[in-house]
Image (cartoon, rainbow, N blue to C red; front, side):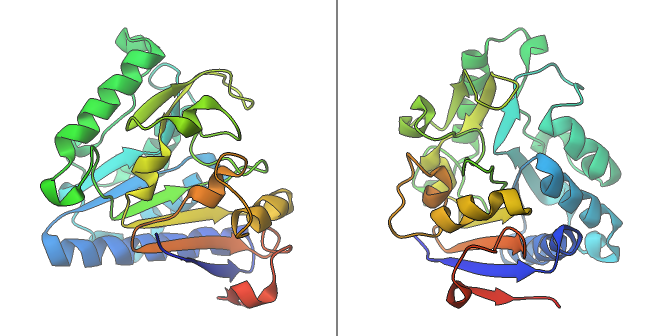
Length: 258
């Protein structure tokens, strides 16, 4: 696993703009190398703001959107179109504004599909397995970029501290009793997250500062601090604003913007 690289931006707005630029550049590089690319999306304020910044960027057309696979790290188990679904926010911010191949937008289905949460997770796991290639060495693709938000409790995706999903080795899992509403969710599991080529943890706000410090500590374990387990095979980035980075040692970070 890679060692995290920490980059601190001035504020949440600048963070979203910078992450958007990084996403565009990384997707273009991946497509130049292999002809296609894969991106795992996250929800949350900064996650959706990042997608809106991608949509607004003049550079967005450098991405070959038809040759991009879009996945989700987690989803609230709610009907399609519900405003609280990560998919709904992502479509409004970006996906409805670019020429994606609908077959390559991999949605975690809600109860309106006639599935239980367990059946939805199993269906997503099967979709991941079908997309995996021999060189991925596992039951899911080795994503080019996997974006993760992080909560004040250091949760990532819908993997909350000390909950059973953290021990699950299936590609996707149903989460019940989430401490953050809604209580039922679908999430990628930690082995899939750690199988991505690059994992980018994006966090903003003073309420995340303690969690960021723990996530970057060598003494933290992923059961108590899930973000401490969020590491990419080739690269791990913690992309932060100044408020969320306030409690980490200055030696760990570099300031990217004034």
